[in-house]
Length: 346
Image (cartoon, rainbow, N blue to C red; front, side):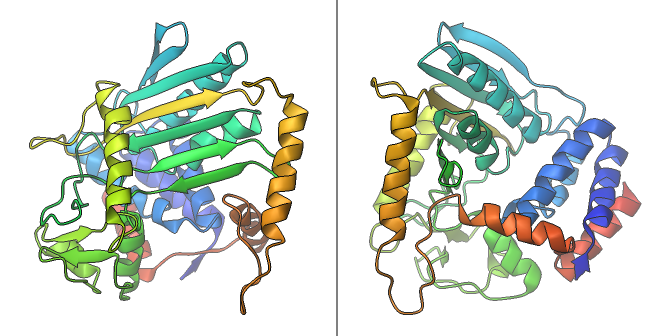
């Protein structure tokens, strides 16, 4: 069903404030979810309200907690999310990294004890807009082991996303935000809420056979698993990236990593920031080179039926402007009914 933005925002705010969130924090969290809906990332949109409500009720998310920051070395900081809204932790990571890069060529910010952070683009985009390069990743503290190693018959790792943000004026920052699994779990849940099947290769059973029904992921008692990026032929590459994320985000920060007794939920992160002038080139020279590179790629002769060569991060910002003008957003009937019922019961 199509829902006016204002109605969706009011419903989301009602759910979170009824569960104890401060009004301003609820507004920020809901606005980020709405922005994700508008940009086409519905896997990180309103459906996450269901998760937040469940975690608050279980005591694993603290709706009034605020992040803290501790400096660990002249060029490294650790943000503690205090189990509050992950969106607030993400904003704190951005502020800490940008402030550091105003006076240092390289800075690192770790993240621990955070609730669901959301899309990593929420960190990379503002850092890149501020004029800096950022490379980051997030694990789930060992929780949500829905991805089986290639050849394995049990989940061991989470979707462990990676992000890269690069300042550019062609027409804006480049942002690559990807999971190290074939798809994010939210994509699976979208299909489940719509009652539709999924492409072969997203999900497999314990024998490695493709599963096309997303409902089996949620009702099979952990016997269906997301595949590693590159599967079936090159799943070892996605697995290797996910393992690297586990080390950077979970081991180096001391936040937590995949193990037999993980916490029920959460995020830990690692974010490395660089100034574009790191190797002696001027910022203008770097931006001009990026413009030339993007133009060269976009001018690639296209195969039949292809309208454009997509550059990471650029397409959805255009979509956002178009969709914002139209105002309504589409929400699966099943999800809207669940959210409406949640607002009544909180």
